[in-house]
Image (tube, rainbow, N blue to C red; front, side):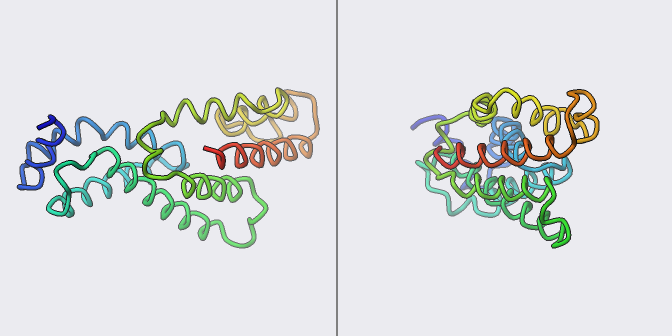
Length: 185
């Protein structure tokens, strides 16, 4: 029997040591995956906790030949979608045009596009990096300053000597391009 199958088999029997080993093996990957979609560290921590609680609660239903990382990533994807829907509701109707709202929609959409078999066979960091790198240089620069480095539109506009409207337009077009690219994954 494969080592992972032994872990799953032990987990099914209620082994705390097997659960801890699985947590040690996969919790950082689950956290990293969730952090790409959720803007709040507290939400990321909640998702990781819920995923492992769910694993424990459903341990008896796991098949021995189950790929545990697939199971964990599907749970994580579903929890991220749930958190993003909550976030979208919190933003409310008045902010439908805001970039946070658009980013939440993009994240929900891209997570829904991920199928179980694709979750195992890719590195989320690499895919997002490639998607961002595919943006036109001017869009990429504005997108990175806003979404990665956390600068406000006004600060970006001043630094690049462009209008805030231009910054907003480039972010909007970047999000559309990323949505389209991630849809193809």
